[in-house]
Image (cartoon, rainbow, N blue to C red; front, side):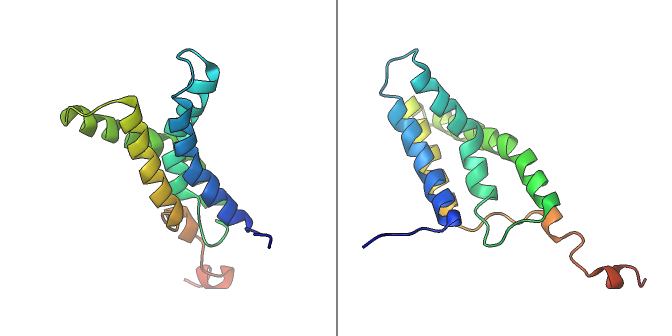
Length: 132
């Protein structure tokens, strides 16, 4: 029996796995690019992509651009909040930090994407918009 996944499911699985792969990469030697590149990419992009991109339907072009512009700031904001909470709780370590972000990203990848304002702008047909 062959399991066939559609492209949206593949994206969701890849996003969910990305954090756990970054966490696994921390077991590699300290200065190795195989360690810091996946961790940096995940922290900078993973949570934001998981929140904004797994959508049931393809976003409009304006919404796609808006989401791309929000991915890194959203990911970095979530990373900052997570790190701050762990520091306040005196529980910060790389493994706990990446584990918390990976768990959040896994849950977010299972949910539909956050609606964006540009996704609904211009939703009315052209004849309705011009009849004011």
